[in-house]
Length: 148
Image (tube, rainbow, N blue to C red; front, side):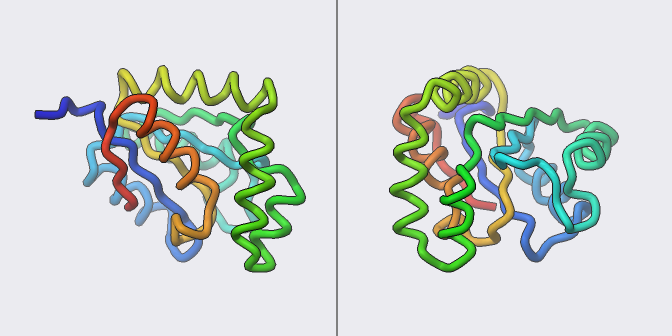
């Protein structure tokens, strides 16, 4: 039987409110939300770093921003244009950088002791770099992936 920490969840807030995201996280027994956006601000109310962190804290969920796991600007632009394959190539290249390797090591450490969820914008994980991060965490830790 897997322990509580052996699940890596992912969640996108594209069509959700902060309350809906928090409800899903609580339903999945998430301890820590790991924000994997390069830029932790949002035009969508409640999803900028400080406001989101405060909302999560009130709900008993920790917040960690791992900027180094965010998609570089050219990757975000490709994703916005629906060029997901191009985004994945750009992101995979980015993962070789020192900042990304350090952030990934921190994510691996968190995943080993906490039940985490990776947060980004896109509703569908298939259209988002967080699926790549989740895949690497799965390979590294053996944790099951759960797309919320």
